[in-house]
Length: 114
Length: 110
Image 1 (cartoon, rainbow over the protein chains, first blue to last red):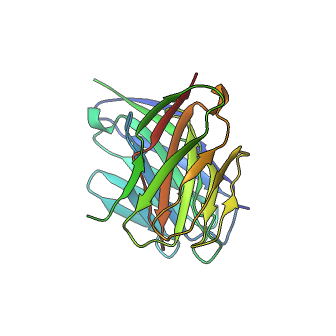
Image 2 (tube, rainbow over the protein chains, first blue to last red):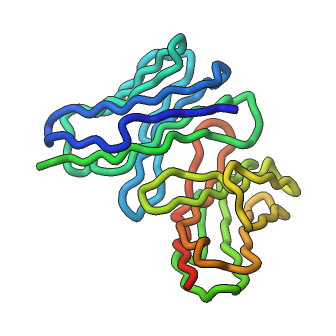
Image 3 (tube, each protein chain N blue to C red):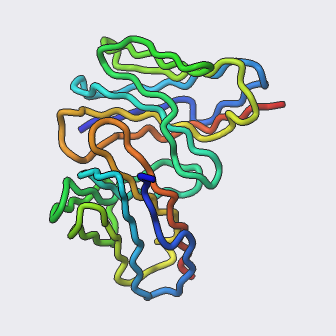
């Protein structure tokens, strides 16, 4: 089955700086890669996703890049703000596969220092 | 509004009690999931379902059971709760692509 590794487990950056979280996956058949943000006490919510036919996708201050050859994808947050502090999860899915759904990374605690 | 609903949101019970955590979705999704998550930690898949009358165990061994009699309803039952079951339980659903999560049930077993 799929295995997703996520690094770092904790990331502390100064407000206004950029943050990068990296994930690798093992199953070359995976073709959908979402990123979820989970604020304290809240449910995980999708913030951006990318499909395997695209190398990069951007939405305002967040962007995701995908390298299918190397089987890794990254989340980039620019001009970080205090409200970006949360746990971020990457995930991978073979949309043509079964119902067992997304395989998640273990999460990254992002801390924005004022 | 299409959403995923979980009840109760918080539950404190004694050891040995039988409990059912409710999950309903109005999104018309076939695939549903239960995750166990300690605060801020990784998501552990404990059960999933392809659709009505389908249930499968996930990656994390769990003493709970699930049923899927209706598309929109996916309850999780613990026959005899133990302190080791103290955690947050998140329900989720998906059709194609994006997976949506419910607000979670925070369970404490004394």
